[in-house]
Length: 569
Image (cartoon, rainbow, N blue to C red; front, top):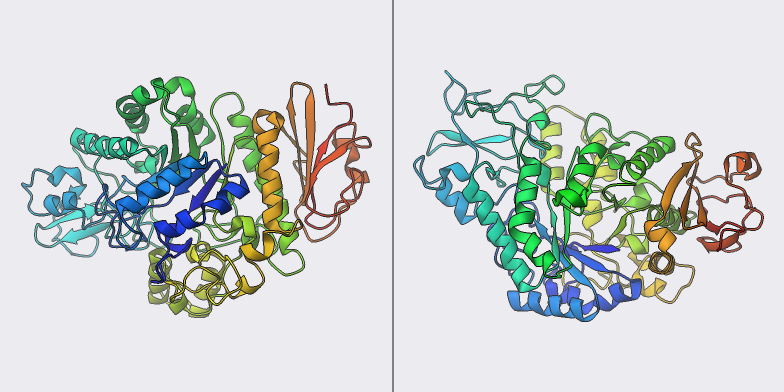
């Protein structure tokens, strides 16, 4: 099991209101008690923090707000001493515009590093800076055009995200060699692998003349969707295989246990199977986004209700698609998603604990590697932000500004932000009921959720009915039962709108998982014909509500893991 730490919001050791590396080290016992195998550390490198560290200005250091390299080394040693691994974030689709590489690149058109980034002149016959003069019509993920004019040289540079995050040009061998050197440097320091940020965007589809193509216009225009030119591009498998061969292969052959995870928006099951096929030696697993896009319209800013059978169809397709070759990453939340209990569950007081533990059971009983995002094991929920001044995320702030400029009603815009903003995942971890939830003695960089007086680690630590206690039991079950870790997966009741059911089987052992993803009770009798035999004599291996029994009707947000009768050898 992998636990993601977003350092800025995990624990602050020095009272400046920003989480830091010594704060993480001080709370490692929380992770070992939970049963964590791998700690994934979101970026801690030097950065202007335009995108909270995903805009890196130095790949070989630690930002002073997080501590020092000595602090990092102490964390790494403490992680290894507890039998855990540490995986870092590798953000190499782009750098900060304050990285020395980019500073040299933009210095002049004849700079030796000019070709390290995507520089292009304005459209033919148009003056630099004129409306529509950008080299392509691509929209940035963070609102506005994906090109920014550098007035000094009269050319535009590409940034798929913020204007302070210029894209590296991986077509240039020296760029890839520099990235490989960065990875080796951290591996030599002792880290155990990397989660590679938007790594399937590093290969762009370039025309023979070096140009990039326009994408289909979005809405009323003028910006377009350029994703066909940069999602899982023509050389991406070559680039991933090259990195494995040049950086990881020799270490793995010598016995190193390293983990590589590729974050890949838009990746298909078929593509993921190629990326994660051990015989191809590219990546161990990928993050796909299909299931976290089901409650969105044309964009994340157009939320819509989630149909549970769509979720089952999506996750079931990925389970089947990677059953024989490849491996799944299992997640419902991370630093880029709103809180899972608010999004997929019910964060009201009546059902919050049950829905948080039901969702956790569903996820952890699938085949693959589960990821827990910090605070998810406590049932942390979306924050009650009421004003744009409550938000900090560059994506959120940019969308708010552009939406108002386009004439949208601010109340409606804020209502959407209250559901989907990334800032909901970034409120401080709720350690206790004190003023700032035990996160800091100072003023936190973003407000603590006021529900921390009720929902916090201290209150749950010794409570066997808590969300935290259930996560401990789930993770222990995966460690103890091979059928949960590697058994076959079979989806049941695919059309049911409320019950998510499946089996896990291995060497004659069969588990039945039943999850009621709703706030009303579901009678079990009408479902029996579509469930495997042996229900009457089954044993409850794990349940999230007291009084769980194999044949009892499913209560609101109830989850049961049943060991079917006669299945034990």
